[in-house]
Structures are given as C-alpha cells and as structure tokens.
Length: 182
Ligand code: KMT
Ligand code: NI
Image (cartoon, protein in one colour):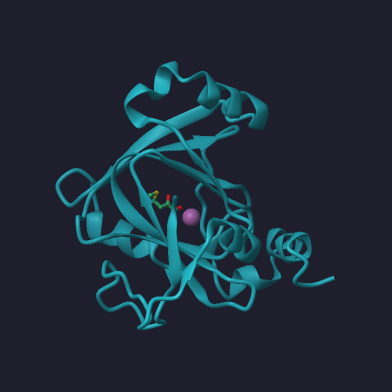
C-alpha cells in the first residue's frame, strides 16, 4: 500500500525529510484518489519486462514509449539544478507516469483544498499523476531513485509553473473533472 500523509506545510527547507504533521495525518488510497485523482498500480520491478499485466496497462493507455532516469548526485548531470526544478510546484499538459525500479522518493500533490499531500513512492510502485495536477518531487533521505518514465508520444516534461498554470486549459479541465469547479 502506498503511504500518503498531509505535509506539515513547512517550506522548502529540508525537503527530503518526511514533513509529517504531529500526530501524523495519513490518507487511505481511496482518500488519496479522491483528493488528487492519482492512479496507483504495483508491479514487481525485477521482472517488469516479462510482466503481461504491465504490458496490458501500457497497451490500454497508449504508453508506447519509456525512458529511464536515475537520480543521485553522482549520476544525474546538473543535479542541484534539476532537483530544484522537480521541487518547484508545476503541472504538465499530459499525465506524469512514473514506475519506481529502485530507491524511493516523495511526490507532493495538492489536495482539493490546496494542501500538500506527500506520497511516498518505493520500488514496484507505478503512479499516474493526472494532467493539470499541481505537484512536485523530491528525493527522500536515501537520496536515490531510479524510475521509468512512460509517455504516449514524444516525452514532453515541460513543467508549467504556478501561478501561470492557474489559467491553463489543462488546469481548468482537471478542476472540472475533479468536481472542484463547475
Ligand atoms: C517531474 O516532472 O516532476 C519529474 O519527472 C520528477 C522526477 S521522476 C521521479
Ligand atoms: Ni512533473
């Protein structure tokens, strides 16, 4: 089960710490889905290329392509700059699909009433962040993650930052789909 909790709201400093409230305020998967629209799957990472359920999901959703990204200080060029970019609140015009092959990290997604929800992703997790969801990513204290990034066509990881994204058609459609606005 994926673990998710309300972030304590403390800004940017020590972003890799859990930032739980005291006492912790956890969400069930159902609550997490209701608050954010995220989709969550699990596949065994070590045998992923022979997993027919994974192949079926890719087929059904048109994820024709994928690439790999390994994040740690040694392996990722421009590490500090990229970490900063990942942690700046943004949306994308497409879904953000990430399968965790090794390591772990935190995706923060905004709740319906605009609070940060911290989602701990670990090996074997596959998350689909809907287009238009405000989010950000950080490594945790292990400072290592290896992911596959899935995409339908060309990879377009263009982040659209807040507040510019507030009026973006993708953001407006997301809020309508979530029933937050009519
Ligand atoms: C993004 O767009 O925020 C990312 O790709 C984060 C890195 S994937 C763990
Ligand atoms: Ni993103």
